[in-house]
Image (cartoon, rainbow, N blue to C red):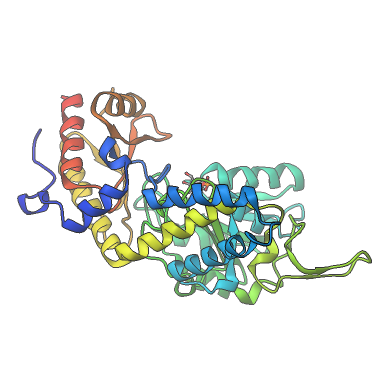
Length: 397
Ligand SMILES: Cc1ncc(COP(=O)(O)O)c(C=O)c1O
């Protein structure tokens, strides 16, 4: 290959990274750059899920088991609140990002001609509800561009109209990893009386997060990507001041403190009002374990290392003669999601299959046929990144 990605000093794996890699079995099987798709859980997370699967199967009706199972969601809620800079009362535990997005979207009584503003990088998690709103209620969806160099903030603000009911955007783009200037956007939208819902699927665990500091109204995230939790876990954060003005659409048992036969009921005063029915307690227990595990590893060094690795790899792509960097490079806009465009004549899908099958290097193809997405997380190593760079060069030679 041409220039190596890593410097000699970077090639040594810090002790703490070696230690965490031993607890993430996937890292011994592959150079895993697919965290933006599914995050590889550490062993204690999976062990906790198994333990609770057995326990929930024997409870919670059994009073001998109930006390051990009744605390699971509350532990998870407290840990999620602490990790994301929210209050416990602002957390609704969900099973994925999409669920939280839908809770917010369907809390609005949409009228024909109302508008929702999304971006041109959205996942079907936001696209499909927007299309549904359009088809069912005649809602207009508008899009702001999140490509590098585009003024996403200016575009959003210029498209706000008296009919805009909600702005719903990815905090970190799934296509190029760009971090939205969310704080500024929230301030500007609030001046205009418009609420901001962020899709944090690619952000939570990838970049430092502070829900209160961001100032957005709603933040939906998942546990199963950058937070390394079990699959089927997530959360919605709702600013406590707007809980009462965020209508409940999906509901049933457990959403309320009391419910009577005569139509009387009282919602939970907090984010639990959007939860209902029998819950997947084993995975929420595993999610809590993942959050505890990450906390023990240390958020500062997690974020510092992710930022270093993504910077090193992004610079290598930028300086390569073959590949085009389609992700932002500057601090503040860059995240662990690094996407590149292959030269003319090569297909991302071919690279994705070949790298996994021949080399044990797992990346993701994107919508553009020549793009691939490389998600670098703190457990990745410079050696893995070097190996990926060498293979990319080899296959394009
Ligand atoms: C930006 C974004 N939003 C939403 C989703 C869907 O996440 P979930 O499966 O947790 O609903 C994804 C998944 O890749 C995503 O990248």
